[in-house]
Image (cartoon, rainbow, N blue to C red; front, side, top):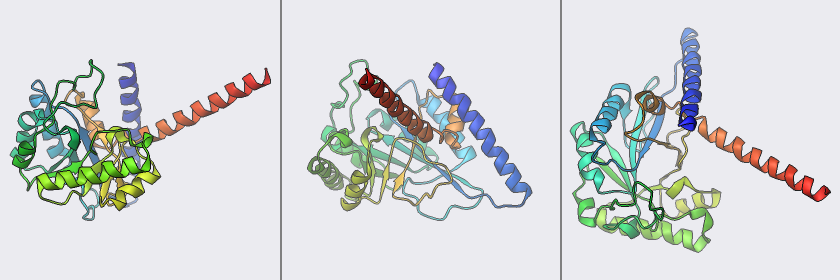
Amino acid sequence: MINRLTKLFISLTYYLFLRCCCFFLGIVKKKLPGTFVVLCYHEIVPEHPEKFANQVKEVIRITKPVNADYKEPLQRGKHYVAITFDDGFQCLLENAFPELYRYRIPFTVFIPTAFIGQSPGWITDEKNKNRNEFVMTSEQIKTIQENLVTVGSHCVTHPHLTLMKESEVRKELIESRNNLKDIWSSEIKLLAFPYGEYNEKILEWAKQAGYKRVFSGLPTAPFSKKDGFLSGRIDVSPDDWLIEFRLKLMGAYTWLPLAVTLKSKLRKSLRYFMDSGKSKK
């Protein structure tokens, strides 16, 4: 709870700073660039539909919903949002998709192909809330409304790609894309890295595998190029507080990548000084 509140406070401060910047730009008659944020959901369980419906209304009220692979020029002063779902759980079919169909909102579903129609075998922690979920079957995937939905890859086995050999990574990227194409009957252009993990080599291999856009697990600045190969996302849930969700929706959590980088550098520095101290002894 403390960690969540801390993030909320920093995000609120960051958002207010951004709004002040926008205000002063308006005074000097500078046109504000369009902004783009990608949301990432996982499970939407039977207790969530009403909360999720309220979040969808916020999306419609504040933003312009678009596909995750949106490539058109962003209109100045407009805020665009793409909705994505990782893992392709069956609970989405009843608890999330109908609300999006109702408002004709496009969305993307990323599916790990080795677990189609099965329980999520990549989850080994019995306390994990998604342990008892099931990934959609091939037939269920085919029933999704194609004019609103984009199906993307979440690799084959939902692995930690950065811990694998090159041949294993390439196999995950290529096989999942081919398997989904056989089911969806359309080219699979999008990839969400499991656990949000990647490196420069994996990015290059994803390009070579034929993907047109890939998604990480941390948000990128809302004014970043929305037509880049790599796009960040912000993790959201129907259980988010309203102010928390609104801040995520507006890109106020985009300080997180910087915090992660600084934390990593601090750990390395501390480890270096500790090792240096031991060597002197």
